[in-house]
Image (cartoon, rainbow, N blue to C red; front, side):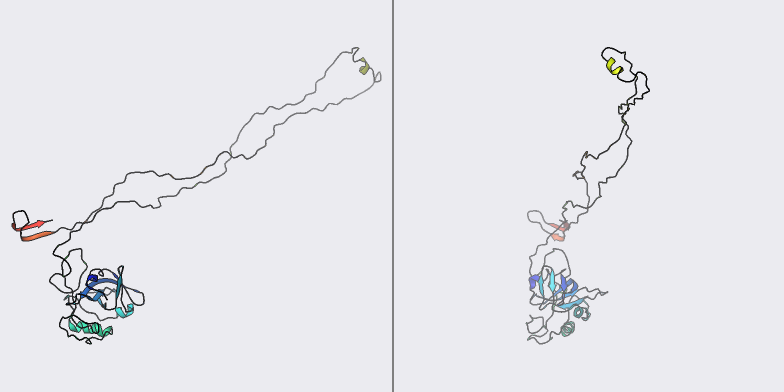
Length: 284
C-alpha cells in the first residue's frame, strides 16, 4: 500500500499493468482527505481533451519510478472518463470508478464523509492536500508546502556541467598498389676478337714449325666469346608502414542557456535585522 510519502514520488513515474505492458506516465495523484494516502492516479493514455484515465492504487506497488497496478492495460484504457477540472472526485465519480474496477464500493464501515477509509471498503473523498486546496497533484518543481512539509520554499537553478563524448569523425585507411618505374643501369661487357700474331722462327720453336709436311693446306679455328648484359630481379622488403592515431587537443567554446527559479515576496514584509518594507516586492 502506498503512503503519503509516496504521493510526490509517483508523479511522473511510469505506470505498468498486471500484464507487464506500459500504460503511460502518471499525471496527477489524488489523496484521501483524511489519511493523506494516495487513492487514485491519473494516466494519460493518449485520449484527447481534459479527461485522464483514473486508476486506483490500492494494491499497487512503486519502486524506482515504476508504478505497477493490479489491472491490465486494456482494463485501464476502458475506464470511465472522469473530468478533473474541479480538482476533486465526488461520490458518484468514485462509485463509477470503484464499480468499474470491481472494488466493491460502499462495503466499508464509513460513509462518504471525508473520514479515513478502511481496507475492506473504498468509500470516502479523495483529493490532494497541497496548500489550502484539494484535488489532483499536478507535476511541479520543488516548491514545498503542505501537511508533510515546512513553510519554506526551495529555489532551484540549473547548473552547467561541461564534458566530452566520443563520436566518429572520419575514417582513414592504408592502401597498397603496384606501380612500375624505368631504371637505366650501365654494365661493362667484354668480348673476344680474333688477332693475328706473328712470331719469327727461332731455335726455340723450330721443332714445332717443321713437324709437318714441307708444303700443305691447313685451317685452324679459334672460338670467340663475349659477355652480354642480362637483367635479373628479386623482391626485397624495404620498410614497414602502419596506420595509427594520435590525440590532438584543441579548445572549443560551448554556450547554453540555464534556467533559474526566482522567488519574489509581495505585500507587507519585514526582514529580520532590517527595517520592514511595506507594499514592496522583494526578489530573491
